[in-house]
Length: 474
Image (cartoon, rainbow, N blue to C red; front, top):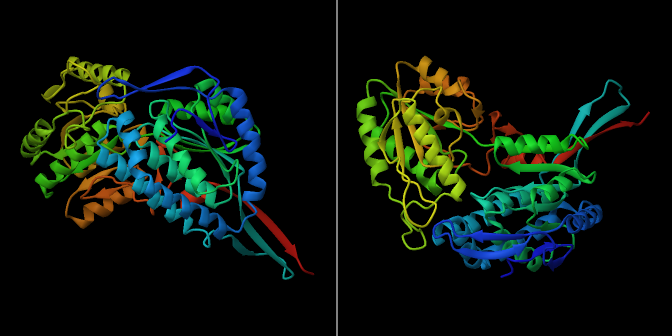
């Protein structure tokens, strides 16, 4: 499958920009080289997308749905090939990478099924001879900026709702994981989408800025860091472009004294070590009721100790690597700074030797809320745990933070559930389970975790704008 060329203006084009080398984070081996798309190529792509949107937006929505179902069909036919590329560039196991492609096909079908449910409103007028109609319309050309951690699924969770609502799309995958996205473009071609409706290209930051500042762009949808979100907000000022930003989190887990401690510890550690902690909803802070804190600490220590790292193409059940050397260096620096500030390392915390960007599952106790490791999103297998006295304190600790994406509560007391559900400052709350982003829900953060969101009806409507029609029939 093609993964060294960009899919632009209905063609497979070699990039005209600088050379990008893509490595396998488990082995540090260079697995692909490609030249990035140039600014001139991207400007041509915008022109093609703008032209294609005129006819794409006029198609009946069920016809657009037909294209999405075909895309899902071809994704399932090519899942192993796309998955193999994804596994080698991300450090995932082959099984997990293939499952991501298949899950992406599912969310594509989900949004295709919204084709007959994109509803406007009829609003009473003050005049008896007038009706007010509120229509939903596409925004035009959507720019979708994709992270490295779940690059195929996140691409499709943005692409599908943008397309079903009548927009055309230009996708910029992460430069850490471009190969699988460029291979996915072949399924776009197989599904027969009109030229310019979907374009996928890797590019540098300067070219991405040119794209985002273009007058033809109707929305910029990003999943990334807070700093990346600030950059996109700056770009959007040029044309007052709509943005949808999912900017990560620092998920707190509150463990009550009546919780099933073994189940809670298992779920928390699985959350923290999935994809080496590179998940925006992964549990990062654990607040345990003081009465059960000693037992919980033992369970967390045991579970984290048992979590070994390795190349997942060879040992699929192991924890894989971080995405880059820079991520590995930053992770160890966070741990070292926490230890210097008084934290205790219960497990891990040692920079591994040898090839690959691995880091051990690391458990820190005796942490303080002011520590950087408690304030910044680690995006790594670092878990911080501390006791609390009562639910008031637990809520205060959980809410005293810049992020507000996901949150977790382990308890069987419905009154505590309802209290946390009405007082937690986060866009999501999971009871007796850890986050999993159900695609029929709505994945959106509070505070610095973002603006707008993905998934479900509300994620689809992010890609629309309204037109009010005052229909006077006097």
